[in-house]
Image 1 (cartoon, rainbow, N blue to C red):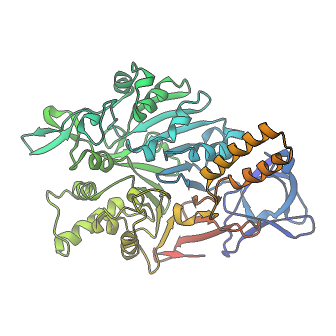
Image 2 (image 1 turned 180 degrees about the horizontal axis):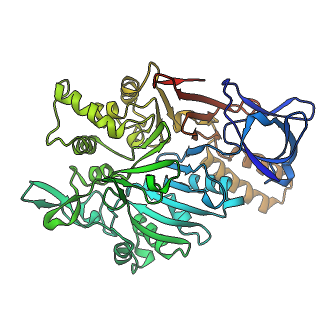
Image 3 (image 1 turned 180 degrees about the vertical axis):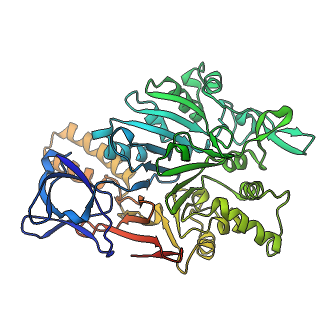
Length: 506
């Protein structure tokens, strides 16, 4: 059987699969994989739908003109709950396909998504994992992946600030010791970076597993997994350098993929003694967050910025660094406006994965420099950070591009059932088990099955946000709160007009 992909209709209308009688059966979106049984004389393609699930397989039909041979590049911002987790899927197929997992949240959601999406044909061999920084709502979801010897990554990247196995939280000791002052510049730096796998092996390889805290345990799992190639730092210095610019290895212009991934952070400087170092950004937490791996994907006319957990001191440092300014100018001054205009040459992107889950601790200058048409916020319920912050959302609209910038949030897009309390249901199940054992009443089995239904996840529709682009057009989409196969997706579409302006086409 051949395969094709669903095309993005130029008329902006939705695309459906039909049955033999021509009735609409299922809505599909740009890039959906199609297994083609045969081409019909009337211009339709006969599709073997759900071929990966034999019990649900059926024959459906689509107009050949609604399909393409090359799929778009896709990014899925997975609903990992509180935290970040995204999957980048390249437009190539077969052995040329590249899949990169950028953070994995702290729960099993990322592992479940990867299993459902890729296990049947990828057998869990991925190109790279990027741990943007050592906060557990970004890395803990990788634990199940790195610990599984059937799951492989060619490279595991991190930001160089690996947390040591020491007691206490929020201490410099976890990041390798107190910052060192450079008397020549008056700037304090962290120089205890884990640059290559030998550094990671030295720090974590010989530790006893029962004594490991979360991040050391993660690194040890990566070292011990035979299907993980290497573990190393990714930064502006530890990357593929071309033309004075840092690129993610295998995604530089010389790789000629048609798209690139630039590394904008962490920015490595020369510390005391000329050693590679990351500067102190106030507290230990602000420092490890502010030096997140910062990536910018460019595909044709469209770019996407992955903002990690950047914060105010980090953004000010980055703006100064990339515009060559020794000090941060006062807002409202000509110097400030000139800095933002210059920074846009580096940071301006059509889509921005918002920094730090929608925290308000970001700068207006950085938002203006990125100036995206769409913001994507990854955050979760049952956390005390109040993400996304209400006082941030208005600022995003103010500094976004166009008259109506789009703000998408995994938390806001999620649909949940009210009322059921899983913990209480589990207690009730235990009581039913005790009664069944004592009384041997078969009727209790039926009651138990009903209660088990109540104990299922309250999430009806996860809030994953899908981004797709072929370099000329871009679409963001999410599943709507509907069980109908004919009303599954809500999307926003973008293209550049003849004047070079970004416009909505949905």
